[in-house]
Length: 494
Image 1 (cartoon, rainbow, N blue to C red):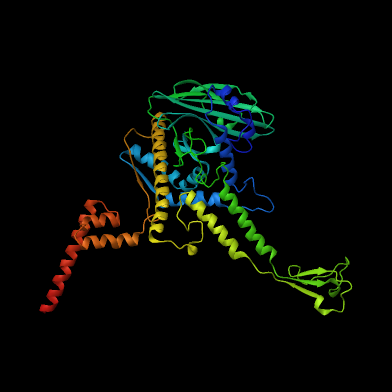
Image 2 (cartoon, rainbow, N blue to C red):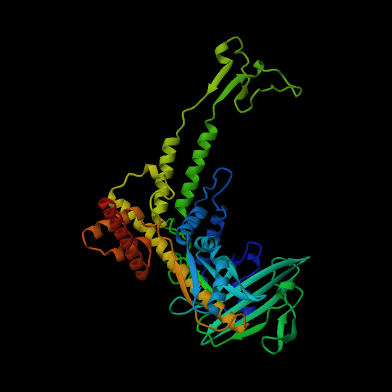
């Protein structure tokens, strides 16, 4: 049980919820430990450049957002998802296209905070999807395979002088998912308030009167209070979990941030803190080392405020050198210190390399690629880290989208949005980020020359063609070549 309030929703909402509040409202308990709650709060703050160590002297280098973004970019660049097999599949494909078009930014959020939920819902003949970040939902239970089987989502609105909170609980058990909604109204921001009344009205989908939330919030007026969907085989949402072992709470099935490993033995994100501090020193080095001329104030004309009128306030500084007048050497003092940026940059680059290693990235992603002197073995090992990180992330993305597609299919049936039918999802990921295509092309060409690889396999591997297409293209090329040979022979005979 938590004894204090913790941030799981937006910062505006964090003070409104405790574990006990949720348990009393929905009859369930939240399985989130204090270390995980604290870590999530820290990751969210770091991602927004609001790390607790930042102040007027220590500025953010922006590494958490950069790491999250870069992994999302490499994992989803030129990614495509095609759902095919029936009219139902065509409908699902259209719904999925809207998600895939913005998938990179959603996965970035999931990378930063350790997870993301894709929650579909039917609206106006389509299936829309809420992408809910890890600090905006409460996990309740997981099965033995690590699949989240129960969760609570929260939606908070301010209307007029009141605060409205909707709690939506999903609990999957057996072959059914029970969805329960409750709405609360409060006159203060830091309280859940009183439960709002419901409205009973006829539902064309159920063919009977159903309880709906109060129409006081227009967006909630069509949300059912209780709904059980069955028979189904999985929860009605997709859960993306960043594919890294949880070293914050080893007993928790929750995911951790992609930059959580850049930490010290005490659990703080020490390496990123060090990078911010060294970067701030570099900025200060340039700021404090600007050239300046210190000049006796008597050398300048006095302004109406009886202060010296400086021609350039960035260059000139004034000093009172009373008693030194007449010594021309003392009228002007140049300030042009030697910069230490080389040693500071070297220290920053060393820390960035440690962060790259900790976060599963190749050297040069964050650090200076021109400053890297590695052996061929070290380069290969470095590239393999990125390869493993990206491929694991892609598998996690595919798993989450498969779960989302299943939920979409259930809703399409429930609300008669498309004819029943089967579907097959095909995922394509561009691996040029993690594979040297040029080197691979040459290597495979050598294998063909030595008879270790057929032309069909060569085209399939290097061009991504299926076997039938590769055979057809080879036959076409051979036919065209034979025709060219015949043309040359004919020209010689003439």
